[in-house]
Image (cartoon, each protein chain N blue to C red):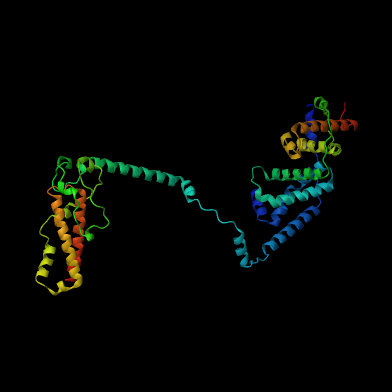
Length: 176
Length: 249
C-alpha cells in the first residue's frame, strides 16, 4: 500500500489502514519519545497520544512534508507537552560555555554508553540535544516548540555536549 | 561552538538503537478509536425534538425592530448601477441640450404648408394673439395657447410634432364622411332620431365649427404650433365621433 493510499484510507477511518500506519512508524516515534522523556512508560503514553492525534487530524494533513515528518512533529510536540507537565527546566548557564572547545576523539564512541549518557543529561538540555543532533531540527524550530529563544537553544545544546563529553571521558570512552 | 572530531559523535548517534513499543499501546489506541467511533455514531443518531410553536413568537416579540432598509445606499454601492445612473444622467442632459439646440434653430420650426425656410421671415399674425374658442371635447387638459409676439418668443416654445397628412386632411373642405352623415340626416333616416346619434351629431357640429375657426386663425402659413396642435386634436376627435356614428348607422 502506498503512502497516499494509506492516507486516504486512514481519512476514511479504515482501522486496518490505521494499524498499518502505526506499525510503519511506531518504532521511530517511540524511540524519539523515549529519548525526549527518558522514560519508557512516559514514551508509551506519548506514543498513544501522538497517534490518536494523527488519526484524528489526518484530514488536515496538507502533504507539504512527508507523512513521517508530520507524525514526528506531532510526536515531538506531544513529548514536550508531556515534559511541561513535569515543569521542564533548563540549567542556568554562564556565557563562557559557548567558547569552550569540545573534542570527541578519533576512536569512535560506544553507542550503548552514549545512550545512557544522553539519558543522564538534565531534562531541558537532553531534549534540545535529541532534537538538534539526533532528529535534525533547527534551533529556530526547537525554540518555537519549546517556547524559548534560539540563543537559549544553542547554549543548552553546547552545555549538553560538554556534559556528554565529560561523562564519556570519565567512563574512559574518550581519552584526553 | 568549536568541536573537534564531530564526525565521531555523528556516527555514534546514527548507530543508536531503536526501541520497540509494547503491543499494549496499539490495543489502547484501538480501544480509544472504537470508543470515539461509537460515541460519534451515537451522537449522530440522537433524536431531534421540535420546539413548541409559541417559542418563535416569543423570540420575535423580543427582537429589536428591523433596521430601516437603506436601499439608496445599498443600491448605489453597486458599481454597475452607479455607472448606469451616470449614463442615464448624461443621456438626459444630452437630450435636453439637443432639444434646446433644435428649438433655437429657425429651420426646425414647423411649416407644413411650404418649404419656407423660417418663420422668422414672416410678420406675426394678429389673429394668433387671441385664443380660439374650442369645444371642451377638443381641449382635453391643455393650457391656453401662448400668443406669439416676436421671433424671440418662438424660440422658447416647445416643439410640436405635426402629422402633415393629418393637417392636410384638416384643411380639406371635402370631408366625405362628414358629408355622408350630413346627407343621412338631411334625408331624415330613423337613425338620426337615436338620442346617442343626436348627441354625437351635436358634438360633431361643434367640433366642425371650431375647426373652421382654427383654419381661419392659422391663415395661409399655419405657423403657430399651438394652433396647429389644437387643430390636430379637433380632427382626431371628429374622426372618433364619425366612427361612432357610422357604427350606429
